[in-house]
Image 1: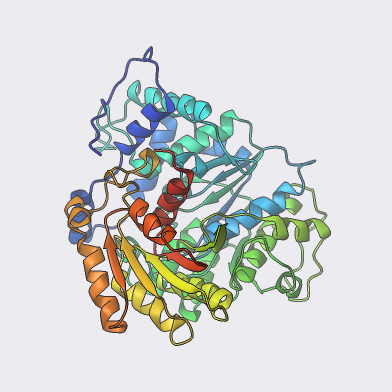
Image 2 (image 1 turned 90 degrees about the vertical axis):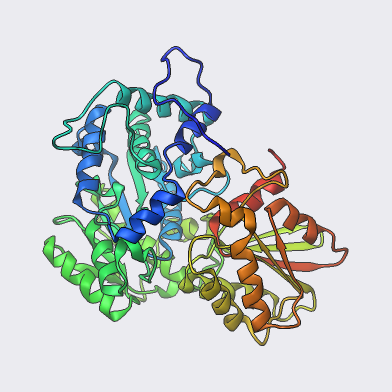
Length: 493
């Protein structure tokens, strides 16, 4: 999809949601630029934060203005989105005291509006468009010192994620949100969300190796980046089961900010609940959410004091209700469609593939139904991920068919507008290079396997739906794949 969006539009032009999405897509870094940055070894630095502060000034805010949002700030390699979902559900149980809760998260599945939610619902297209162009026009009509900010030339805009972060602050302030939950994009120290000055609580979910070209190659470097969200005298929490080397660095970073890092155990009562998010591993994320929500509610005077972080903690009934009713699509999600059971998880790191495979195995290993794997991962080490997946499932679960697809949505070669990605190699996608390499790897693992390589998600769905018997389909490897699949289910082009 070729995008040619003018840097300036007439303020009187009639600008729709599709216009906003098209303009937003024009802010994506293209594949060539990303590869150049990786090759240079240039990692995120303090200028990212200074620029975000300046962008905020240009749309009319000082960063201290965001303190009124009472933000809970969450980072981690795996589980930060699930932790945010549990935390949101917990706060929603107190809707008599908390009226408008904002959630900023990424990536989205079907619609970019999912990234900016109020009370658990994406903002509507009309509001997204209005607020989007509020920010766009204010940036067009203001300027920055090129001596201080050489990249902020007239007419320039923040990149895709930074723009959405900026937009989220604008939306939540204008909509009068009195509570917000922010999921970090990448890392923490230099992430665009880290202009938050005074959150109510900070949390770190499981650490692992990911985004190494930006965060570093070791768990210590990654922990240093994640611990960058800690703020002076703001309560900081981490799951207790962190890798030892990472936990040590998190503790050091907390001491730098004059706080003690509180380690959150898996609470016994959480283990005994049927959580709203499937997967045995979710007990860790749910426990972290309990700690964050309890600290937040005490800070606002809704609870008399934070809950004690002891394994045998007795949970208030509202906390139990929040944990059992939490929702987070695309993560250990089951969709029954006639005889087809779609078992969907957007796992895209080694740790998350291990967790998702364990969830899938627990559901299907005793059934006699045929099993299909639908997989794609376009930018990370896909070979390593499918090797891990195969190792986790073998020998008790084998696939009767394996389908490797791109993330292109439709048979026509088009992406759904909200799912356009410019940060992958178009040549690689068109030639199915990754998919063909995955086929060869799988055939080395299982020489007698039936393996298909297809150019789009719609075609992959057609293969699955041609079966006239009960089947179980494991869809994993990428949240982009999961989002595209859900769009195909909707059938809206």
